[in-house]
Length: 305
Image (cartoon, rainbow, N blue to C red; front, side, top):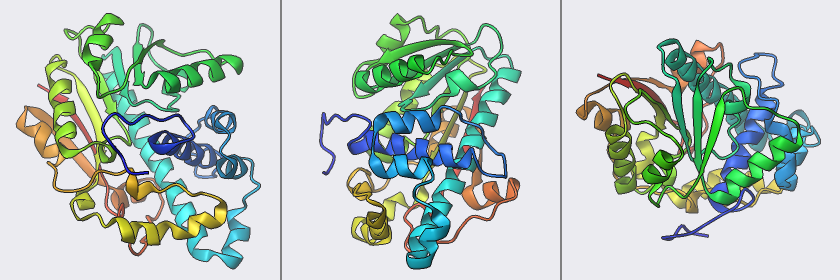
């Protein structure tokens, strides 16, 4: 179903299902010998959502090695996605570690989905982690992790609100202090925002940020030339796994500002690394897949003032 103004979702539908897909990648990557990430909560969260194909993947019932025999392209793309989740997760984990080392004790995770960093990262004493997402998503994750006996490693404060609503006010009402440096994370978010909403998001982050704040996100330069039909063709093989998500219908494409350039114009000092270089940094080789609309991703981090 195509996106529309005011649409909503849970973790098994629309944009929400992409959070479950990402958690599936994190769960499988956590078992990989490269040891880049360790997310012990990803697999149980995926099982709790209950999308059959994703559950079979984290439980090893869908074996990629066996899949290669009759669907090598599907297996290659699945492996590429898992490696992408590994390096992407490590990039943002390292970002938060650097922010903590710089003395930042206030973090905000936008569209937090099934992100479990408030539970699994070694946050310094006194750190407050704010998670913003739709109320149903926040409630599901909170209750599921509580049922597992998971305890946050920082002071976790949830902000159950859609980012299209007045989330800055809700954030302040939950104790956020804009006079303190903040580490912001917008992971896996920008492609699901219209170009003008992306600008507003960074405008708001800037307005809420004290000097010394940090921000991290990723940007897909080729989104301006996104071909939905070509993307569907490239992903068609995943239906063999029982995945019928129409990802191209969830993405907003067209011309948009470079995230790094837009932030730099507001006074942020930003750096970026491409997906191929990020893979190489961690001893992996980024797969080159034909007709992949996400084949170029720039991972960005920056500081203010």
